[in-house]
Image (tube, rainbow, N blue to C red):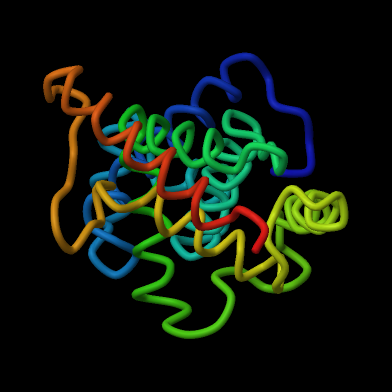
Length: 195
């Protein structure tokens, strides 16, 4: 059924399943997620879920892949201004804390070491090319473009929902977020400036 075009009703059910699964996986991880809760929240049944996604692992893969694509599309990299990119990532984590939690569950339950996704699923190749081009132009410090990208992303996650120190929320005062944005922008800028 996944290879056939969805009817409008089927597309709505498909999206409800994805939305419910995103909430379930973000909250409970892969092992803790329950298909029963997902189908109840999506107002469908197991047969429909399995017809669309195969099994729980494949459903997580679909949800996780979609979350990576969302981050790429909503927060595209600007290698000429990595500090601004970090701030935009920070803001996206405030808007969609579930996305960063999905990545954390994938790290904890699937890939405790190495790259978070397989090479053929990597979505950061264009980011690495952009950073390498900025390095060639003298706008970003020398070094492995992947390491530069990893550092900027890590800095953007300092107050994310998976922070070991403090998890910010969108409900906090605007002044607190602006102070963090200023510190993040300045810190990333200093970290990536050419030597």
